Amino acid sequence: MINKLVEKIKKLNAPIVVGLDPMLSYVPEHIQKAAYEQFGETLEGAGEAIWQFNKAIVDATCDLIPAVKPQIAMYEQFGIEGLKAFKKTVDYCKSKDIIVIGDIKRGDIGSTSTAYAAGHVGRVQVGSKSYAPFDEDFVTVNPYLGTDGVKPFIDVCREENKGIFVLVKTSNKSSGEFQDRLIDGKPLYEIVGEQVAKWGEEHMGESYSYVGAVVGATYPEMGKILRRIMPKTYILVPGYGAQGGKASDLKPYFNEDGLGAIVNSSRGIIAAYRQEKYAEFGEKNFAEASRQAVIDMIDDITSNVF
View 1 (cartoon, rainbow, N blue to C red):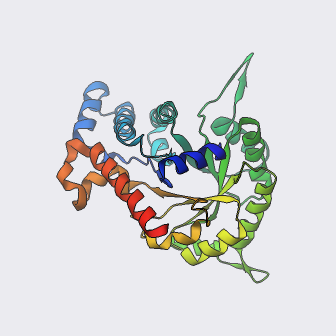
View 2 (cartoon, rainbow, N blue to C red):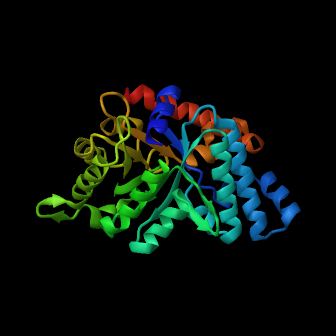
């Protein structure tokens, strides 16, 4: 799957991923109204609203983007109905040949980690049949519990030709409380990066490992160090746009071949119609505003990085 991701990025000249993280407040009133007329002001109605919102954005941008990254918490907050919308979104994106990175940030040990991996990137056996429950192409993984928590994901991904992105240096302000702590004179995020590179050496695609890393756009100097530590690791870069990361900060995350990183934007794309820059589209044309925001993001990155 890492080979497919690289090829799609090269083909589209678009090292970006759209974060499908729909809060109900982002969903235009006419979408909500139609969903509530059908299902009432219920959790089912909320699930229908965010599904229709996602579908419209995917339809408007699918020819421009290599990947999407739905954050599962935005769906879980609506319970089972939200998870149904998550699954519909995953399946619909895959039907459009868009790679799906499930932002699930799971991390546990033993049979629990194996179950998470099976549910999201693997298969489960039910009698004589097997099923891929959520069936994302990649997922994000929290490495805090060590190899015991990560290896089950790697094992399942090897079987299914899928991949993971391991949290290394996150974009949030308080990330340094733990991630920047010195261990034997070295920041913890560097130690994690070294381990990600080791895991990845054993699980290589053609040019990059299917064990990727998450490194926030808000820390470009750290990104430069981690790029050197993880030369064959694809880096998922959150924090661009709304969180303060600028295109001019992104160069250290890429290799000299112009590959090696994929940059995420969530509300900057899906809620673009609410920005002054895209106000001319109006609420009814929210998906067209998202399309223009994708075009602008690609131009911003390719102009300032390459």
